[in-house]
Length: 192
Image (cartoon, rainbow, N blue to C red; front, side, top):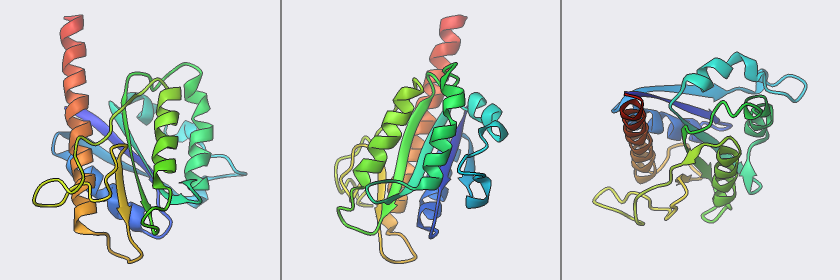
């Protein structure tokens, strides 16, 4: 069993709904924890990474989330990403599984820009990116209705997210947790 952290910012609550779904899926295969970035956490434009550094170091996987604002993650998430350079120096997050999710009101609202940003951040930290393993509109639930292989995307202008987007987020959480467990087992066998 691994530990999956869902590290995210949510402005309107839509991204929080998606984060909860990711967490539900991940919890099926290990310990899953929500770490929500709050605006009041950011002091003088900086996120206090030292408050969660130990938790990040101990995690087996980290799933990043943010709404897409102007083609990228919210400034609040970016404040965390900038502060994570403290962990980058010693590659404290290297070889952890990483994934991402985002929300947006535009049908093609450049959400891939946010997911690409997450993948680049993960790569800078030496993490292993995990995308979706689903074709568009997969199965009876219509998983991956937005057709993204980079990660989970929810599209809405309503307070409630589409059930297929929530199911896709749960699938992503399960997938990451399963891969983290498999990776841990391989590492244990290699050191035995």
